[in-house]
Length: 183
Image 1 (tube, helix red, strand yellow):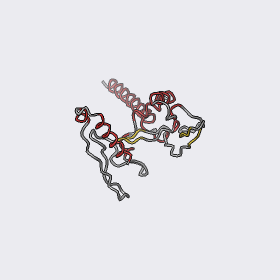
Image 2 (cartoon, rainbow, N blue to C red):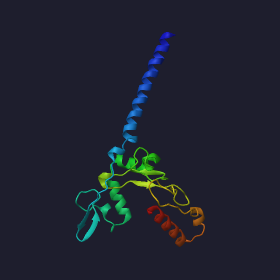
Image 3 (tube, rainbow, N blue to C red):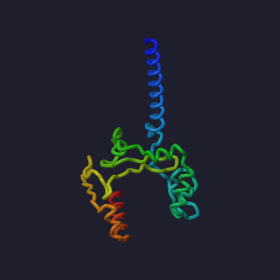
Image 4 (cartoon, one colour):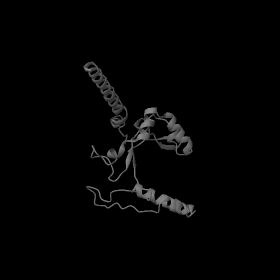
């Protein structure tokens, strides 16, 4: 009986070590990566053949994804082709609400943000802050150190807008949401 208990204890201990090791590996690869993804804030503009663009990846040449004259489909395809698997995973998983609201770093974050997509500095892709709400932006109206109040409009939800069959109205609402997000 004692022998069975010893063997069970050893197996439990080994299993615990495997789980702990697996968690530490996943944490280092998937959860604590933001330090490797520090945003590039100084992006130089360049002019090539009379076209001025932001050289997002600082390689001194015009990449397809940097060329606003090209179609969105072609630009996205080129950008995805240039991204590593790790970069794609980090874009998909984001950094979570803690990073979005600036937990752990008081210099960054937007009060009321719902999440953040980490930057991809190698390609000059900036941090993208996400807002939640099917009827417009969900933000904190007041911010520490600011005298302004940031109100957000409560727009009709998408199914209601769609039921109008009024594409001009839907486009106007989308533009208004974009303006509020920019503000």
